[in-house]
Image (cartoon, rainbow, N blue to C red; front, side, top):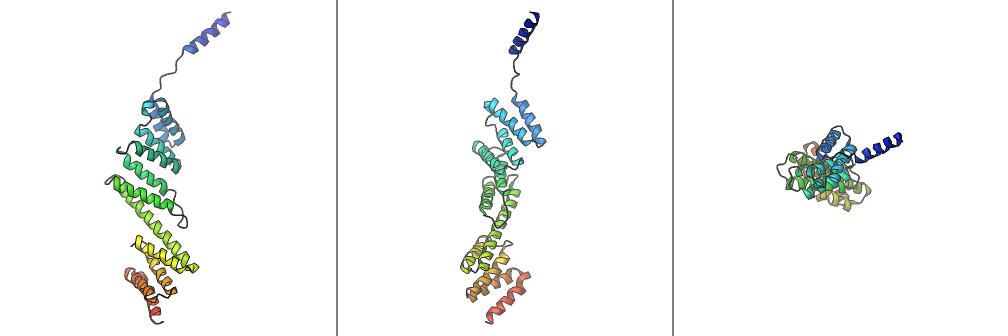
Length: 241
């Protein structure tokens, strides 16, 4: 009998015991600690618990941004991009909005591969960095944004050169001219311009456009002294034909 009473008292006391109230500040500090130790998934769960148990903080700017950062830290760039964009949708003028926009650009930039692949991701990254510079001029991320934007332009120029060269070697000379002239028009002064002028000259030569071939080689000689001797040699051959 005594044993039964003891068990009943234990059950009663257990039933009366209440779970301590949820403290979002404590949970946030716990999540921050996990972030600092690169435990991104655990940190994300803690941030999401705040959103679930403290509904008034569901769209808290710091929490939304940290959740995006956890995905970025795990190199889950597609998920991170969605979360950064959600942050901007809810907090377009927040002090961290330039950071979120910069990170959106970086999510695409981190997905870039070799120049022989579809450049759609490169164009997306370029657009996002342009948005950063347009919408948030003078932000702390402006210089980095300019650097990555320039890198995207270089990669797109290299892609056009790659395709132009491919068409030239294949004997599709009109297609090669289209690509090479697009490069020269859209990406003047970039590293790929030098080879674009050279291959444009070769392609024009194959098409029988002697004067246009000479023009391309003359431009190569004038703009790039290190290729002047080579270009002049091509010009002399064309003029003696």
